Image (tube, rainbow, N blue to C red; front, side):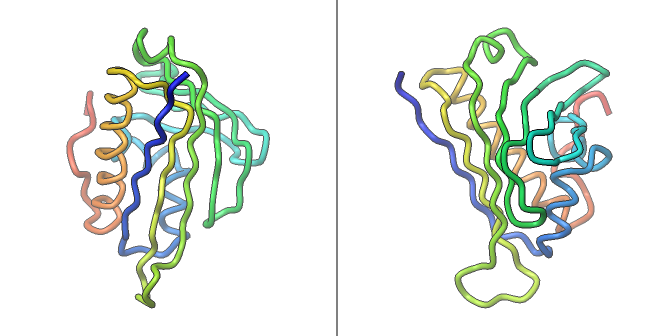
Length: 151
């Protein structure tokens, strides 16, 4: 199967702890993640679910976690039949210091691997750009990039 990793990397004017909190707080995630709220203990081996309107949208398992540094999780989207038909994939978040010393700046890199080539996968890849940009905008301005669906 032909797969193409998706990587989005952004410099964010925020400390790693603030980014981590936004990634793991179900009251914050709807403001940048299409209105989806995340729920998990975020312990290694713990399940997680993104929900919207009380229905699961993405499910998976946290497979590796170092708070405020990195997290790897399996990913199975179910918000659309085409997405639900895709195999389970892997998403990894890494929070690092920029190459040049810039106090208060953190580089967030999201890598999504295992996604088979095709239109549905390309749509998921395009979605990551909006999610990551939305997270950056929210943390830097306190305002969402766009109004979440259903808000």
